[in-house]
Length: 452
Image (tube, rainbow, N blue to C red):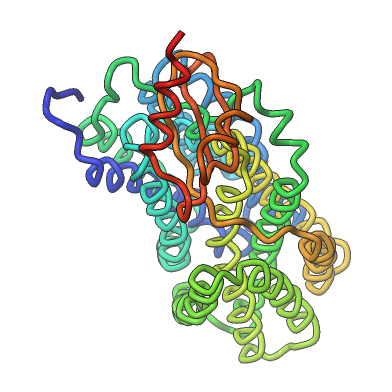
């Protein structure tokens, strides 16, 4: 779809968020029902069910950066079409099988349709620098919304026709996503690219991987999604053992999610407005571990729900803070690359949580799943304590055809903290302190530097 009319960035943000919603719904709806309904499949064991639950994360981690880079060659929309098509095929495979290995293969194919990198690059192509962070925040929020809705839809759909109904619904959602992409998402202007803040760049990978602060955050998102997937190895079974019918599971998930979201808000306010990010962040990691310890020692449904409330309060808080911290900690021009590695770590955590959670449950029971998540959480807490408090800097991107020594920019322009010029993109990336930075002073310096 193309038009000569100006592109509405609000429309771009909403439609791309919808793409995320439909895809993530298809991935998340099986979380609350896989361990219950999957046990009916031929060859099913807790380990293989855990593999089916989290296996999408492994293929997602493998393919998301390559497909994002491929979008630079083929174009953003063709790669997103391909991702949705693969996701649809995976959903159909999972819906049509009666064996556990069919479920595993279907879920792996769902994950292989990894569109995250290409969608984020398209956000960069279709939005201005000043609105890009806001657009990405809206898309991030849509993922949280998808998870909450999936906790309701998954049990309702499964109670009507088992896992096949869930997967056929996922296939339909993929088709709707393709239609939205075709009819509502505009084509990016010719020659306009997101740049290295919108997409992972191979030449910047080593710099991002070796950054100690980013490494802490990558370990953190791995641990967070390890815990989430492992939790759904046991939570549906706890509700089932308590005599709660599958159709009624959402009666418990929904209030827990809603109350946890409300409880998170004051902590987010303190973290961002009062600039206590490190304190709140470490407290949230500790809260996650406290919930896991609590759930090991309680056995009644009421206390389990309280433990889940504590867990999801910490989870929601960390899920919101981690991407923001990556953006703050990433060196100038490295945001897209840092987010690519961050997302890969997230999906590897989901895969590991399902596999290790299923293995622990199969061999040692419920408590061992929670203890495994707790051990990973303790490693994260130890690393988080040593994190550097982030500086409150703003990203600025300026077209620049010629190189200027970054030291000269930092010395001559007040408020410039970091600078990176990417020759291949003819773009200058800056991180600046808004209290001291003036765009006019930067422009004056660059004009002077351009004079022979």
